[in-house]
Amino acid sequence: MKLFFPILGWVFGALFLVSAAVQYNDPDPWTWILIYSIAALVSFGFALGRISFRILLSLGIITFLGFIYTFPEKFEGFEIGGGDIKNIEEGRESFGLLIISIIMFIYAFRTRYLRASKI
Image 1 (tube, rainbow, N blue to C red):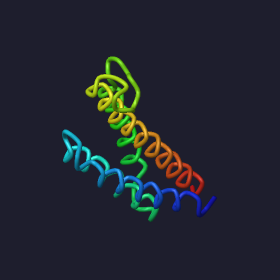
Image 2 (tube, rainbow, N blue to C red):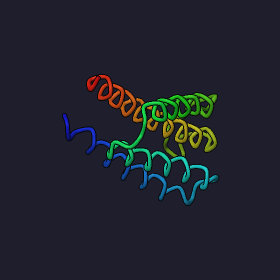
Image 3 (cartoon, rainbow, N blue to C red):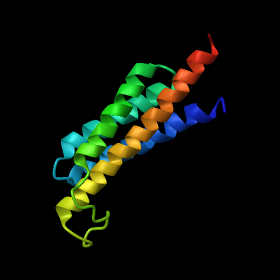
């Protein structure tokens, strides 16, 4: 388990960078490039043991609130052609924030666990 979490941080850091890179054709690309880039940097920081529990927990809460805020009134899935494009776009964006939130909570609780075990 000692190597699992740093590897998880590197893997999700790379995945968040890829997510940032594919936002170029989004209606609001710079917002999502910034969000995914921050998630990538935090993931790399977690992998190196340089991010505090409070930052990770705060980002987890903020992105979870973002998930709730951006979740569409009527969820129609993720596939284009399956419904209103605005609802699909909001669904994709909200679940992207949910993924970031879950990962930040995992990082936060792992960081808290490590800190508590060293006391």
